Length: 441
Picture 1 (cartoon, rainbow, N blue to C red):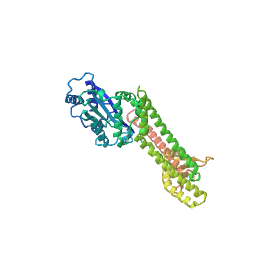
Picture 2: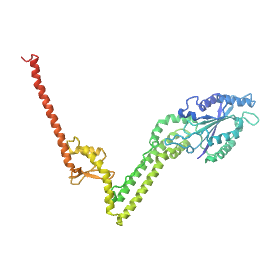
Picture 3: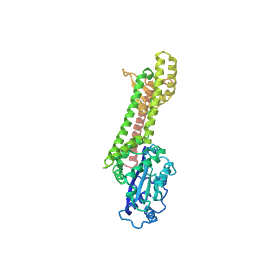
Picture 4: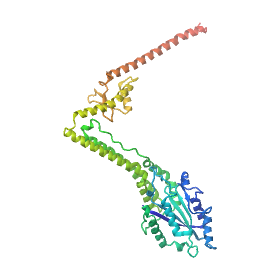
């Protein structure tokens, strides 16, 4: 993880006003969450805005004349690699850093290096990653306003080394010295984000959602006879799900990287986005930990299968144990299966209608090769019931099917007969009504 310290010049009153409005949220700030603005904090500023604070420091140094193009301030942005900050599954930073050791160390570093020239030190926690804006007025020891003397290439390199040393307690290190990587101005990043935000959010949405843990089905009675096939099926299921999730991650990372590279100087920014995506706490929570748990479940299941295979091979697993276990499974599953079959028979006019209802409830219909036997099967346990010769409460299911069909057809006939009688009554009433009105003479 890297310690990040960026320095930029502040020229002119317009630039100072813009910085003040941004740092103290006096205007619109892209990507700032208003609901988290109460977590921002100023530690040094004693004036209404940055302009007054900078002017007061210049006057206190006895500087009376300032060139119009003079650099009146240097803005430091102090932060760290995104993975330093703990996040929830949605990528939002967890916790409040206002009284943290990290903020205290940054404040102490700036005071030691710049003393009274430090006029503002602002913590922001309402954006994606916590960071600090520190404003330094570049006044020399002999009270001259001279940024080019205080901030030279040599002193800026030394600043990076000193800052990284101060951040060592937080396991942060210095970036590569003399690297050609350039920092992209925030206003350019905001412009990129406004253009690409919706596209990137759509790509990131699938992996930011918490995935359901992968489930391993327990082996059924028939699976115990072919353990290797069951194991291969479970491995294939897990591998397919991992491949799908990995494709989501790679697609989102490529989208984020391409969007950043589209900015003229943002190639390094694209690498940072890809690294952030691959190491984010939310992704770990949603995929890595659940994947580890699933692998452990598979390992445990494989160990059980290995033991069962050995016991079966050496005939140390008694048929009585298998029968007793199968009996317990059936006693647990059959009551619900029988209830669902009974409900599926209500109001049917054809056996196929009942079978379709059972399929809609998640059951499977197994048909024998000669198409003379139909079995309703619970896919989770392999428990099944013959739809023709099976019995419910001592009665053949085939008899229950025929009885239900007969009852439905009988009701249909009764309703048809009733409708016919009602129609005949209407026809008989019509002539009587006509005569009562004196019609038809």
